[in-house]
Image (tube, rainbow, N blue to C red; front, side, top):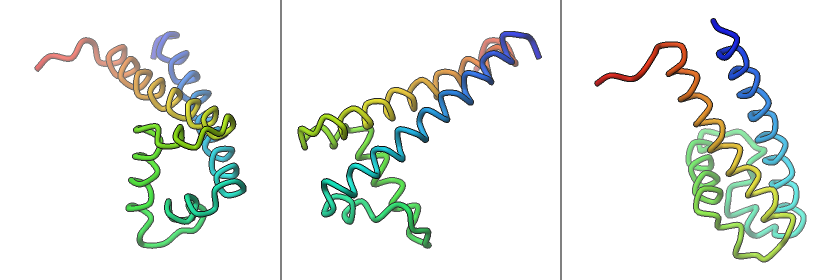
Length: 106
């Protein structure tokens, strides 16, 4: 693996940590300020067989920026950080795959 490949792996790890931190803060703020939304999203800290459905609810909540409707600065900040880091993470994974394997040919 080249130096660039290793640097991309390090960036992916950092972006993943940033995303996790933003997720924890977003969930904490929702639980404190908007308990009804917290319950609608499925109380994400519990694990059950329905966790896949909850994950899709959370993904929709973040990808469609549903959190912005509350007008809460903290919720919007952590939601935006989470969305930006998810997009950056996907871009880094694609860049890493292209660097390791070369250009994608169909």
